[in-house]
Length: 249
Image (cartoon, rainbow, N blue to C red; front, side, top):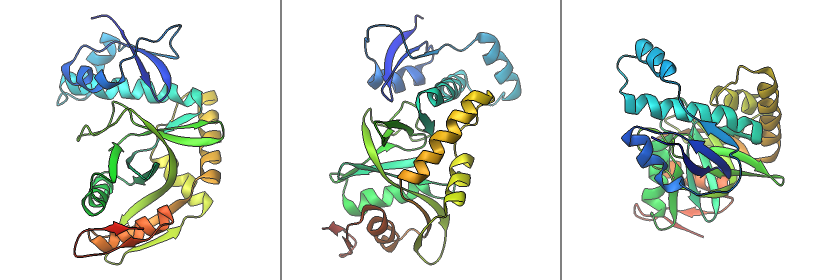
C-alpha cells in the first residue's frame, strides 16, 4: 500500500499504513498537502518482526498503531512539540489536560466533566496522547490519531488552559504544583528521545510549558464534587452543583 498524506498537529505527514485500525484512525487527518512532508513514517518490516518477537501478544493492528505513534511523537519534538500522556477535554474554547499513570483515573475524570457539564458543552480532544505544540508563544493541544484504547480524538487544536496531575484521594483537593515537580511529572508522562539534540529540544520546550501553563496536583474521587474542584481552579469559572447535573457561569 502506498504512503498517504496527512496533516497531524499542524505538520505535513507522509505515512504508510497497512492495517485496518490505523487506516481508520488516520482517516480524519488525511490531507492532500503540497510540498515536502515535515515527517515521514514507514515501519520497517524487520522492526515489526522484532517487536512481534518481544511482544507476541500484540496483533499486527496493534503493533502498527503503537509504532506509527512512536515514530510521530519522536519526530514531533523537532517542531517545538511533545506528547503528554493524558486525557484532554475541551470546554469553552480551551483544552484542559488530566495526566496520570495508567489506571489512575484520567479518562474517568474527563468522563465526569462530560456527564455533569453536558456533551454539548465539552468534548474529548484526545483521550490518551494529545500532542502539545508551541506556536507564536502559545501552547496548543492537538487531537491525533493515537488516542489509546477508547479511540476518542478530534482533528482540531485549542490553546491549553491548564494541566492537572491526578492522584486518587478520599478528599478532593487541587493545589499549584511546584515547577520542579511539574517538570518531573511531565517528563515521566512523555516520550524520551535517545538523540541528545532532540532531548535538549524536549527539555527546552517542557521548561517553557511549565512557565506558561498553570499546572496542578489534583486529588479526587469520582464524585460531582471532584468536577467542581477541578473545574473551578482550572477554568477560573464557577461550577454550580445542582441535583447531579451541572450548570456553570
